[in-house]
Length: 464
Image (cartoon, rainbow, N blue to C red):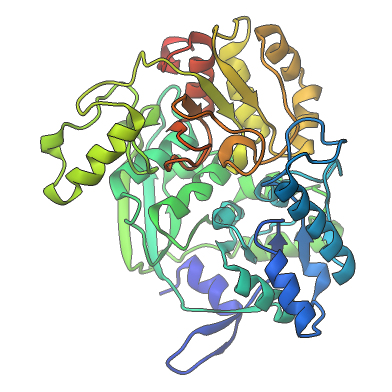
C-alpha cells in the first residue's frame, strides 16, 4: 500500500480489535464550547481526569459575538456555553484561550497558525471541519461528543480505518481562481457523497503550488464531499509556514522534526482504493446555486436545466431552487445581493483578507449591502492592521469585526435575515444555515468582494 495515510495511521495504532475497530492514539484534541459540555459531564460522573491534559487545547468560537467581546454575551444560551467551557477547562486543568485572549479565534484557524497542528499528527475535535488541519500533513477528523470524552480519558479513540482516495489537480490555476474555487469545483463533480468512506489525499501540481492557507481552505471543505478527512503531504511550503511559530519545535528538535516530516509522503508505488484526476484549466471562479455545497458551477455558467438532472434527483433539485428563489437554466451573474460575509474556518485567514482588499481598494461598498469582515483569530486581526488592510476596508465603507465563527452558522448574533441573499466565504449553504430562511451562495473572497462593491453577483475577473 505505502500511502501516506497508511504511514500515519499505522504509526498510531495501539491495538486492532478482532472483527472490530482500531484503537488509535491521538496526538491533539481541540475542544470548543458546543460539543464538549456532555464530554466533561461524563468525565465528572465517572470521576476521571484527563489522561494527557497537555495534549488538549480549548477555546470558544461558535457562540462568540463579533462585537463588544469585552461585555457579557447577551444571548443566554451562547453565554452559558462559553462560560461552561471556561469552568470545565479550569476544573480539568486544560489550556483555555478564552474570549479576548490574544490566542483566541476559530479553533481551525488557531491550531495551524500557532504551530499546534503539525505533520504526522493525529488530530481530532468535536467539529466536522477538523479536516482543515490535514493541510499540515496530519490525519485530522471530526468526532462526536462521546468520542471527545473517550479521547479526554484515554488519549485514544476507536475507529474503523477508512479507504484511501487520491484526488490530483494538475496544471496552472487561471486568473481569479483560488483554493476555494478548486474545492467547490471538485465538490460539483464529486457531489456531497462522492467521497463517503474515504480519506482523501490531495496531490498534483496545482495543489503543490497552493500556499499553506490555500491548502487549509481545500482540506477544510473535504468533509463536504462526505469524506472522513482530507490531507496534503508536507513539503517545503509546510515547513516554511510552521518554522518559528509559537508551539513549533525549536533548535535541534526542529531539525529532527523536519527530517521525520520529509519521510511523510506516499510511495511512488502507492496503491489507493480510488484515484481521481482533474485539470486546473477547467476551473473558473465558482458559485453555488443550491442548498448543499455540491450544487456549484462556474460563475459564467448557468444553473442546470431540469432535463439535465436525473429523475431521482429532480424533486430535491426543484425544492432547492425554490428555496433559493432561482430558476433552472438561469445565470447568477447580475443577481442582487443583500449580505456579504468574509470569514469562517474556510476563509478567515490573512490571505483571504488580502484577496478581499485587492478587489475593494479604492472603491466603495455598494448601497444596500451589509458586509461582515470577520478575522478567524486575533492573530489574523493583528496582521490585517499591521498591513493596513483595515484602512483599505474603512475607506471603502467596510467594518472589521472581532474574531469568531460569525455568520458561518446561526449560533451567534451574525444571522442573515429570512429571504435575504448572502454571498459567503463559509463552507455550508444548507437551508437556514446562516439564519432561518437565509439564502446562501458560497464563493471565494474575490467573488465576495466583487459582490460587496457592485451589489450583484459579479465575476471578479472583470474587476481585477
